[in-house]
Image (tube, rainbow, N blue to C red; front, top):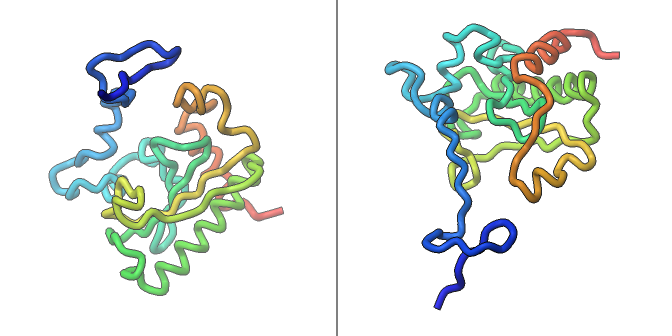
Length: 181
């Protein structure tokens, strides 16, 4: 006989599969097509949005940096090619160079604006690897601070963010082209 799933505080949860569910219908706007012609890619749809609404921080010739709409930490950016491409090996040399240069600039800007202690930088190539929007390649730049996984994050499964995304976007965009030093 299977054990009865228990919730917070140990109370029995009859008829429950052992998963807590947090309904987030607002996320549907992020994963659903923004308009019939965008093939369902929210990254490609950003080109037609006002800059503050799109959360785009900076745009280069081949790539752009954008705040993650559902960040792991404050300032969580993504750097991605303008061209809709899913596989890393399909990027041309110029796209690879600009992707990495913009990632370096993202790290510099985040250090200057918010002083994180460290970073997680990386790609999730394919859905099985964690890429929820794997049809458009994107590199994550996640600032980290000592203790950023606190009580509410670990026990409550909730992340608190101290600033509106639009305000974070404005700070990072303002600092993007500022000379280092």
